[in-house]
Length: 121
Image 1 (cartoon, one colour):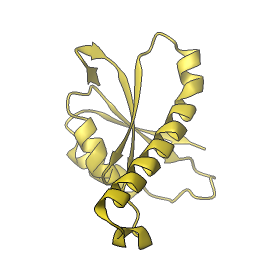
Image 2 (tube, one colour):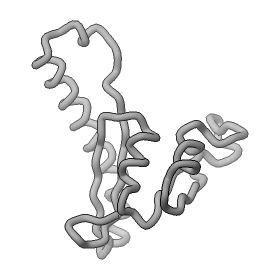
Image 3 (spheres, helix red, strand yellow):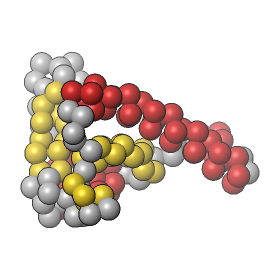
């Protein structure tokens, strides 16, 4: 992924603002809650990347959390990318489905760059 003209690995986590009772609150309170949820997810994503950053210190990385649907966010992030990498639960994982999920399906069909689907546990 391009980052100020340099190559960079971008880790993107998409999340949508959850429905719930706080939606009835004032817009400023909703924004504060959304910022807090996004900040919490960003910390979690950075923690997940930490061991890889330590193992490959020469690889520039950028973690971001976006408020959008997963397929939409990944397609947007793919603009200017060389490759999109999606995780898929490995066979044998209790949550693994016998097919590709809807996000992977959309990205495979609509991305304009190569897509790698990588099994993980």
